[in-house]
Image (tube, rainbow, N blue to C red; front, side, top):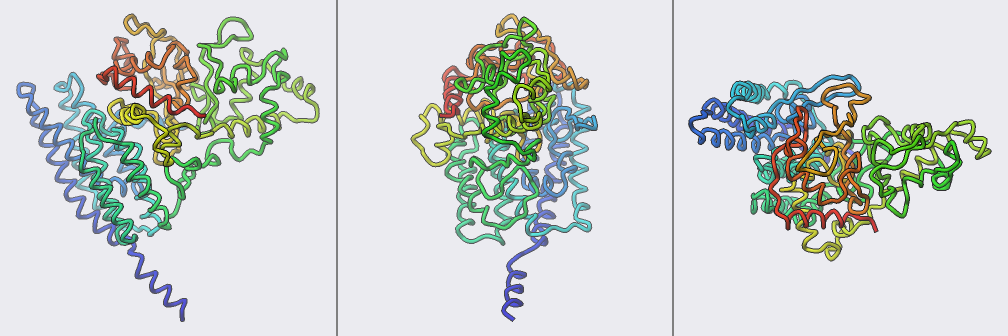
Length: 556
């Protein structure tokens, strides 16, 4: 009898999908109206009347903010429809099927509205606006036979909170509109409504405070992201973790906060199911018997006392001359779905084998290596080395200490630098928190490649196009020409020189390159640059603050 009563109480306590669908129906009407208003504003764009362009931008902003009240639902339950509304404004390649996803939706509209030749794009803008408006009007059809569990509903809002903390406040979706803070407030309001039936008064109070903070200062460039994260979003995430949602995202540990050491599960990344002896791997890391001529070990190029790099632009090839690329660091390398600058290896194990067999790098012969080591197999060598590399993720920087509660760990300049990094500087739109690499939130299931247009040398006044084809050299797709993996900027302050070819000697030069809009911004003719060519207009003091923040990402 007691068990039956408990079950009845649980049935009453869990609201199920009806409040969700009721919310969706009401909010969809508003979004559809905003989409029509945007469509009408775009139709009025006239080169003779610049005010019409500004009106179209403002209408887009209102439409985007309205969309964010539905984003948690569409991103989780209907990803294809979410893509129609909010896909990145660049071609995406669906590997390994080589299917192209063309830019479409609100981000593409923003890209066109802020293009210098905007008035020539009116036909394309009209077509994009029609897609958004018609798709918004059709959204109620998604509810036909729709069902959702409480666990799914809770997971959908938990993932949306991660989007707020990593994508929305960084301006990832709307770098030109700079509407990210308003969009974050809209998304947080949606979370508040959806989880209200599931939570206690303490969580409701935290949600109210968080929304109020987002609404207090909507200015994108001045918004205090560090205070928002430490004082509001992360404590709220900790509270929401007590809700028993499901976890269908292998890379995420659903019981921690975003910047916890174990927030991301290493076991979700390629090769993690292999077993290896970590202690053996550490010894083998320094073993020169792994190279063909017995002169090199892994530590020759990845020197522990130099944060596992060599400090050179490009190391020396065994065949003479320089290696074609800069030695990538190994710290946090396990949190990636692709290895090497061009991502040609899918796991640490694959990378190790490729390096050992490379004529330029180690030129190893398996039989010779096994003969030298005795009583060990090649699989043991590879798996143990990979197991050791997976331990190289200390999360022990001043920033990590600050975010964990030690607010004396960062200087005011470093705190300001974080806010600029995640805001005006747009660094956080490619170097995603918490790894600050190309691992894309909130699912963290894909490693991003970008075309920056990095010139051959650090001379930005007289640039020459670099000849390195990047990912295109083995994956012959035009969008990959000159594309390289986005590395972590953890420990960047002590792991120069920089970029795939090591041509930039200082972080100041790197930042100057980004500030000018990448290769296209400094005058190189590029048709596929994924980095915005718009200048950031960072002041010198702001650049210094960003560099100070990156210095605070140095592990101690």
